[in-house]
Length: 348
Ligand SMILES: [Zn+2]
Image (cartoon, rainbow, N blue to C red; front, side, top):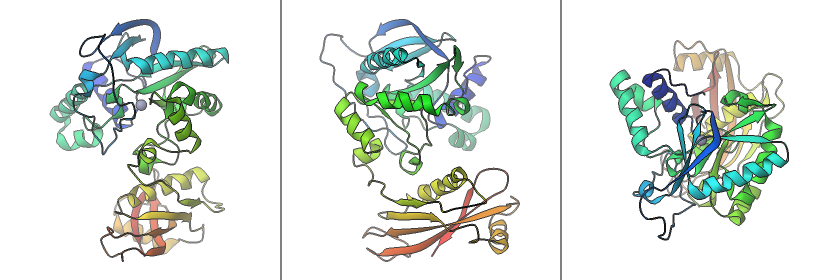
């Protein structure tokens, strides 16, 4: 997603969309770096919690923005890109290390203030109404980009800037080499593949998070954890996933469906997912498709898939479930027409 400054509204729309998807894609250059200090004296002891958790459930801690020290650079549009100071230093060292291997990265965007996000929300509310704004714009205060510790990269490949998310994601070999180096500079990859149900975001190879501790970063990375899991904010994801041998769907298509099941499952209070599996190409047919179209009229669904899950309930689990019980073969139906899968029905 490229941020173009044709009009204030286009810019606002772009920022809003960038923010809701967790990341944005401007087109920066690091040639100009100016030191800046937010809040207070440069000589005083500087201490922030580099393991701070900010996500859709955990807002930016109060006073954070006035405490952090930042550095800034500009992107190609001469827009300022602001980053927490130590994160920026670490980024420059990572960048220079990668260049020795012929890999070229750029800093796309980093700090977005709560006020900036609120301004976008207000603009959208004025322009399109509160409902649309709430759906389109990330809630001010609930983006990791507020911390200044989240960095979105772009790539320079054969002298060409790769800035669009859909292009960036194709460079898997380059990302693998970049990701390998992150921990030693105190970075982790924040939005891992197949962890959307925990982080709230799909896979973003470009979104780094600085935690200022190489040992912890190595531990988090080697164990394949999200920050949420590492900090104990959610129970670790140990579910066994089985996509079977489908002749109708690719693994990627089934993965898209499974992640929706996992996201919904995350709302089952106190439940622990043991396994999730695709029930097979023969597990759902015309009858199920008719039912889906009946449940969600007018969508014209043409395909339906069934997934099965095993999970354990806890003492907190409500609804129709018994407490502290193993639930087997809980069923989940998803249907689609031209677009993505819609989770439409689930139950025993
Ligand atoms: Zn990002």
